[in-house]
Length: 518
Ligand SMILES: Nc1ncnc2c1ncn2[C@@H]1O[C@H](COP(=O)(O)OP(=O)(O)OP(=O)(O)O)[C@@H](O)[C@H]1O
Image (cartoon, rainbow, N blue to C red; front, side, top):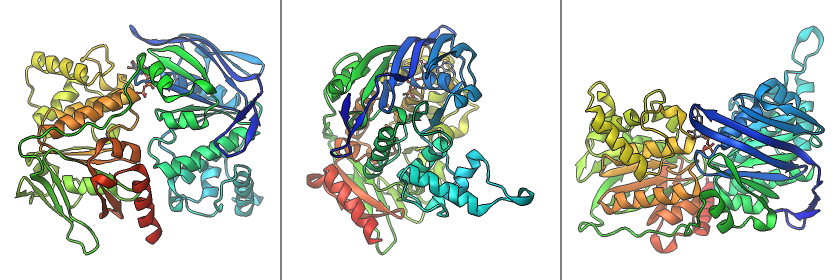
């Protein structure tokens, strides 16, 4: 069969013999069934999308294949041989040629590309066991050439763009495979934090790898990626295979319908309702810098922060919140926030949802309801308990309002899927009805249905009079959600895209214009 790919004019053979066959995989956590009888094939030399709503079971399936979670039942065929997944291990997964690359690319930034490759494989040594740096660089050169990665072995990883760093992670995972036959690369949301241009670079590379014989499983919530590069896709819903789709079926509406189990009107921009004092400045951030613009966000406004990875969007939000030292002057509702630290910002009515939620924002061992009530009480007063009945009732309301997939509010937060943890943290801050809402990548890792819900909830907070400042690496999200956007470079606001101009193309042009000029 010949299948066109995203690289113009290119076509590749897709052999009908599967590289990987999964059969009858089941897994329950107590009474909660995470996977039930999951079976599908992954064809050789192809990109196979693995899709599903938050909590549908994708991560559980990947962890089973990686040998870090034991299946209750199920088998996997790699090449000609079958393997019992109830008796699998990370070592066995590696011996079978399964390679995994996760969303948080795990390259060591201070080390060179060659050193990063060596860390996985072991350093080339010469006489007396000394590291043979020349051989090390030669090996790195061979690997980089094989994967057509245009970087030098000696370049520090910190100097590479986000997509290149991810490609080095992939090359590192695949360097000892033969690049074809039994090699299976499983990528868990590799593009989640990449801006559009970087996503394109990475997807083109994946397409090339597949054309060279690599079989790839791509887990993603981003449907345009699936439509652009996947040859097939499997949709998991509530732990079971909802659909195995061929390329002609990979349309937005069909994918949404299979993921959600119902059609979803595509993201429609929800305009802010007037609050009576709409537009009254609620957040003012005076830059105190000759090339930077001030930020003013009015009541009822949702304003975006656009920039490349590393442009300083997150550090700007952290400074506004007072989590790192402010160089700007922050004024909330006409009152300067003078005191240092996050507590002063919270007291002034500022809420902040950071990007690195698992590390910065959640208490994984506490229950869902405890996590929700922490914001209610203020993070500093964890000792003071409100009635646990009330706490739990509120938690149940929020679980329902945010469509969190959780069997009970008493479960620990770690037992939720990544996307559902995300909804909990947003719910936690929203219930405070903040005057200013600072959101860093609010829908990263969130499924297509939940994303639309979260957008509506964010707009509703604005309609209630909040001023919302939202950083997102997805220009599509900024256009769907925001009234206007600021362009951030080196942690400073350097440009503004007004409402009439707010399109993905304009954001892309203006963000890259700043990058080129710098
Ligand atoms: N360690 C665990 N203990 C209990 N339940 C768990 C555990 N890990 C996952 N689950 C449950 O298994 C189900 C599937 O979760 P999984 O993390 O596989 O979903 P997912 O499809 O990867 O979701 P997301 O897109 O949000 O990352 C969920 O109901 C989740 O709550």
